[in-house]
Image (cartoon, rainbow, N blue to C red):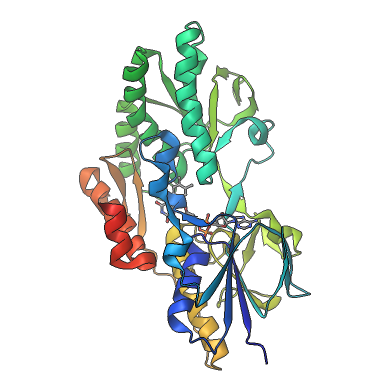
Length: 395
Ligand code: FAD
């Protein structure tokens, strides 16, 4: 009899942690486990703002999957998922079709553009190693172009749409990066403009206490960020953005961080979704398909207060651990354990040396918060790759 086949789609925070936990927990007579991912590396999505701005190398945000997965226990397939067929229990990849007994979907998110014209076509997005390489190269290219066409100050104008966690962390890094570029290209820094446009009346991640929001915005304003709050982007064109007020900001670089939705493949597969995300049951399964588990940004988990938890790496990691535990329980005919999330808080970096946030109910800011952020990041490396990976990435 063939062994039950567990297929995991996506090697992001949720999918990778599921695979790593399963490889530790299962013996080789219990199941065949296959992990599918578009690339042969895992990227740290929550670090992508740094290589995007050029303040860190992009290889610091990726880890080869072969370093993390034991191929004697988990079969890794580098391929792109094209279609999920939950009724047939099949997944169509670009080069083959896989059948499964249990499926874990961790395909991450896609930009939510709210139908704003031009955002899809003309704005950059921070979403993968390849997309952030393009942003970093483009930013530097704009400085090089400006030197040849010095009347084009729009080459030195950057508009970031959205001021949540991603937008805030990115503008912090960009503000750190631009002085180096000004020096390298001998550009007067007063000609550079960074606009952070936000529809809500305040910047920074939702839910931060207002004194911390003020602190974070002060830090970023001092670094040169111009906030346009309570302001919608009405249209994005190849030349810049049109704001709700009708004002046009001429900018050769527009980066959209205004929202995310779940991977489109779930909607296309017929799962019931809200913003592309599936409202999962207490075991993180699709309510209509108990053999399909959904983790990370593709899932929606209600908090005890009845509101969904915002998608985060922190949540995806915890979900991956719970799904692996429950898959092992199913294979061993043991009871399942409901998912419980002990939300630890959020820390947003404001560039290299400063951050702001709430951890375990305590407010943190400045250098201390930046250190806490580093500890959070290091903890994740320990979870996925142990001390060896930790030392390799930290040193
Ligand atoms: P991901 O980690 O995005 O992984 C999805 C995986 O699926 C990727 O490997 C991708 O290549 C693969 N994939 C996608 N489509 C296909 C396909 N068709 N076929 C095959 N493979 C595919 N969260 C925090 O908790 N704290 C933070 O400080 C934080 N900071 C952030 C900063 C930035 C700049 C960004 C962008 C996000 C940040 N987040 C943070 C959010 C966090 O990164 C996401 O919530 C998290 O990555 C979700 O994990 P996931 O497993 O769902 O998906």
